[in-house]
Image 1: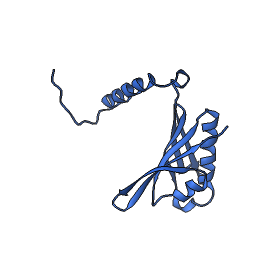
Image 2: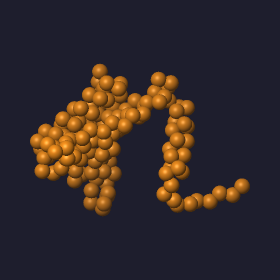
Image 3: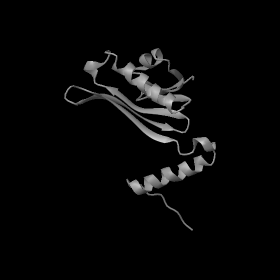
Length: 142
């Protein structure tokens, strides 16, 4: 049997790869964590329902992972970021997550996240040649 590599943007193939890895991983996780997947998206809206920021995340097994966190520059430092983090932490606790994880770059808001109790557990230098990519985690105590 011969195999070959192809480069394609094909959602069916992409979903197949995700699903196969998911099934493989399920065999290694405890039964109570099986099926624990949920998208959690929070948005900041203005008076006319325009989107001014948001936090896009997912619950996966025993953690919540933040994928995207953005607030329009003109409303930063008004407390919206802290409110979003507090809300996502409440949701994570309600869903019995043990921790929250995400990543940020050195020109973004590392100090803000540290101020809110997130700790760096790893980093990669030379990202974009002059920046550092930080990986953060916050343990949730019950």
